Amino acid sequence: MLDKEPDFVTTEKYFRNESELMNSLNGVYNRLIDTYGRMYSRGLFSYLVVSDEAYFKNISINNIRVMVMDAADLDITRLWETLYEGINRANLLLENVDRVEMDITKRNAIKGEALFMRGYYYYILTDFFGKVPLKLSSTQSPNDPYPAQATLAALYTQIVKDMQEAENLVYESGVVANERVCKTAVQAVLARVFLKMAGQPLNDHARYQNVIEYTDKVIASGKHQLNPNYKQIFINHSQDINEPKECLWEVGMFGNKIGNIDQAGMVGIENGIECPDERIGYSGGAMRITAKLYDLFGQKDTMRRDWSISPYRFVTTAGVTQKQYYSAAQLYDRNPGKWRREYETGTKVRSANSTNFPIIRYSDVLLMKAEAENEVNESPTAAAYEAINQVRRRAFGKALNEVNGDSDAPSGMDKIAFLDYIKDERLREFCFEGIRRHDLIRWGIYMPTMNALGRDISVNAPAAHRYGGNAGLNTTERNVLFPIPNTEITINKQIVQNPGW
Image 1 (tube, one colour):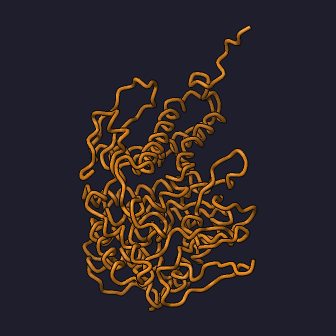
Image 2 (cartoon, one colour):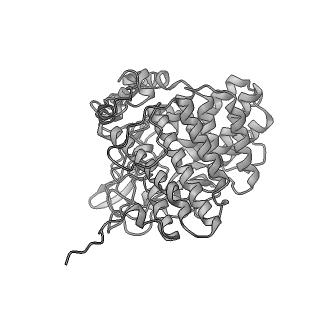
Image 3 (cartoon, one colour):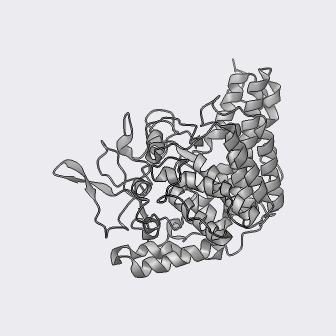
């Protein structure tokens, strides 16, 4: 006899209990980790966010890593698809979350996290692609009408709406692991959204006041503080230790692609220290640092520099693998060093690990506050100096609340000088964390910064590394946004391609 019961899950037969709601929420978070490496498992701290902090070894032409791509580029297409997959999953959950009879606090948290994640996926989309379709309901049929591109104002209005509603629904910090968003994580990301809105392309300067409001909420919560040991932040990631005080929200990687669960990433591999020995932790050393970044640390900020930028690589001679330290002249040979595979525990495999990636840290909250205080008050306030000096004192291994002549920002700066100092400090603090490109674009200096870098490397770097300037030389105004994928342009006739593509 034929079995008349369907052998697949339908919406009508799902969302029946708390467990199924949680499975659906996990599916929303799941899109932060694209198994092909276009999200936070690789691309969003690597080749999708090319900036002045690094270049890519042995890649000089015909690659997205040197700004040579078009609207048919597979990585760009897959980024777009993954983000809309996450949005569709969030929409589906939001349409069904109220069907389940369960504890109201738990249900509110699930609803809040889904709202936040929808807003966050749209934030990434508009940050990379500009005007995109705004879809607030799940896809029901291939015949659903295609939505038109929304204005930037409409997109950011929806992003803020989703996140502000989520703020009052999600758990307080500390109730769940920081791989799920909590109240202070929502507030911190909202501050980042408002900071973007205050800069280009919206230039809504009134939003700087919102940045102060939301960073103050995080600070006043008392839930977060700087880890006094800068390098321990990243060792904790490598050893699968959650530390919610410094890291408000991080992407939860799991496993190493051995077995049935594929939630691994390449943190410390793609952006890791060159090492041929899989027992220590393999990395091809794909990313190389720029002399600009190294020199920016100066002669005193050496503790943070020598952790962020590895002073050594691993070489194997006669079957023995050892650290080989660089000479002072070897700047362009060096790799990012924040996540070091030698600290990983458990079974290691060649090109995958469970190292989490931090989306937002407490130091970012402090530096966003410092920047906004400077903008609102037309000069750096005492609060702005206090915020940036906490970050700098930690970098030098000093007490956070004690004045220190070596670490502290120079007093008496005007608005422009302080902003320039913030720009440099953010690069020192967050190098290789996927933030620099975003910052340069909102400040309106992405193209000139990249062009200047390209010229400098092509002239002043050792001959063997001068190809590292190609990304900068190839950068034009169109690179502020990615092209909308050809696949979308072809099927959705309401979409207009971004300028220059």
